[in-house]
Amino acid sequence: MDAREAFEIGGQGHVFAFWDELDDRKKSSLLGQAEEIDLAELETLVSNLVKGDNIESEVDYRAFRPAPYEPIPDDLNKDQKWVYAKEIGEEALRGGRVAAFTVAGGQGTRLGYDAPKGTFPITPIANKTLFQVFAEKIRASRDRFDSQLPWYIMTSHANHEATESFFRKHKFFDLGEETVKFFRQGRMPAVDFDGRILMESKGKIAMSPDGHGGALRALDRGGALAEMVSKGIDLLSYFQVDNPHVQVADPYFLGFHIQSGSEMSSKMLPKAYEKEKLGHFCLNGDRLEVVEYSDIPDELTSKRDESGNLLFIAGSVAIHVVSVPFIQKIVEEDSPISLPFHKVVKKIACVDGSGASKELDAPNGVKFEMFVFDALPFAKNPVIVETTRLGDFSPVKNTIGVDSADSCRKDQQKLFASWLAHEGVRLELGEDGIPLNRIEISPLFGYDKGSFCDSWKARKPSVDFSKDVYIA
Ligand code: UTP
Image 1 (tube, helix red, strand yellow):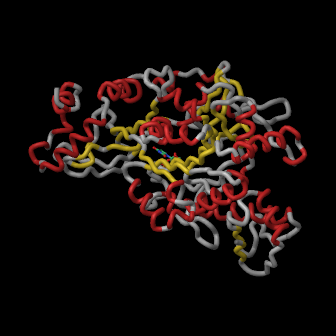
Image 2 (cartoon, helix red, strand yellow):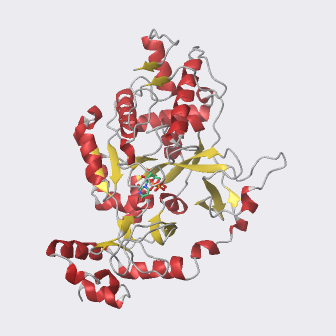
């Protein structure tokens, strides 16, 4: 049976409605897209998530309990458990067991920036891009631990070429071209609320990236997994492209993961307030799960202990360590583990039955995405490790307000001021805790508190803090 027949039988024949109007190139590209689609899988998704009862909403959350986590001590250097975890993590870095992994395939619609998000300028003075910040942190970590620390970056069909050429233009930020690897994630067709595939144009199906959970199968398909195994890499330090605060390969976190014999571990932040829009770490029986803020009932988010503290306090910041053998187990043929798809309701650019572009003033369809944290319930011995907001999390999602470029630049300066304060430098701060003169510290000078303090003591730079300061 050819693709056109299969789509007709599957109730999606309209995908080829304009077939006779297409030239040969467009016909072959449309056929290529059609072949990527698993019609049986799509039918199930439509009936479960779009038309029928949404199985996601059937979960009974009342039995969920807060997940335990490893609390962060006031002084990391004085807590034996943390000191030991750090030693183990550093040993893994020195031994070349770790790769950095960035998911950068998202569409970044909220930011409204018309280029791969990683190319967005984000630092307060030097205006370095997100990719440059990560690149410099990786370089600095390599130097500190004499480690290979290769960098894998997941792109999408839409931004792959632009991402690669950005790195080429910037000479891979001196990381060595052979140590930075890009691979595309998979994609899924978008459908309307009746489950009909949406057409972006007469000869093009509206396809969108299959979510950050698509990373696991994309690592396999793109050959990255096999390459890691051949290089002796068994630990992936996973982070998102929108968060320049992240510690790209945190020895403490790696150490806790290794020590516990964990297959997948996550960092957590205590929520700043009851309704903060973070996923919640919960125990469902003995399974660790992340429940999205949009799914968790108020009844749970508002629960407090006798002292008035929120019980479901642990928020997910999308920072994980994932063991390579665990990913292999998930992606192998006939694996009993598969990540579910979720529906994401969005405005999706498309044409109508006559081939004319539709005006959209409200969401008109559904995208299907997998979430990486859905792998957690399948992981053996998962650990959750607390982190600090400034030390690991200030994402750039929106154009203004919360989680915007502006809030992130302010957070960077608060963080740098806190490192300087630790070395006895008191900057003049405004009411909001942000230094009155702008300050930026290059990751090549210090990429976390420990590396910064070591550099500061060793180099004793003479700095005039009465004006804007960039320490490199
Ligand atoms: P977000 O959930 O913020 O989605 O992604 P997004 O597509 O980037 O942004 P919006 O919602 O359209 O504004 C969180 C992280 O997951 C990656 C993103 O690149 C970001 O690092 N991601 C998301 C992927 O790699 N692939 C996807 O399909 C979705």
